[in-house]
Length: 207
Image (tube, rainbow, N blue to C red):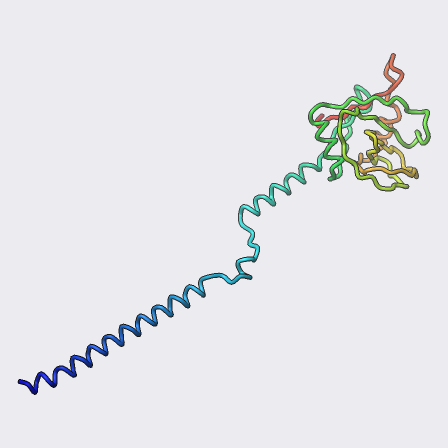
């Protein structure tokens, strides 16, 4: 009996050491795996700083694009109270957008006080806008103008070249009319208002 117990004790100790070693090994491997796993799952500094376009960003970009597209529109112009309607195609800039925005709140009926007694009246007309309207400008040097081109000139003045011209000035491009014989005739034969001694031009955002 004593011999049997002596033989069992070393076996029990060996078995206990084996189980303990295995458990320690598993614990170390689990700790190592968890450490490695957390490192691999965490993005690097460079990766976390990369810009990723989200659906919200794309939506904002689309809204900005729509706003820019909305700024490029058309206006309707008549030379005289009962004149034919002509389309003024606006350029996509702040000046044209401001004019379109103001006209959208109330149609413009602008008098032409001078139409045949100033330099270059044979090729151009100008229409003064009331000073209460604030219009930004970004003038550029212009020396050659095509018939139908419309410019803005400070302070608050629209200039229309209804014939090709070579006139030097600092103007902001606003838009253009499609050049036709009917268009030129409408400008040149715009009647003088009875009792007023001037002509008028009407500008609206719809016919």
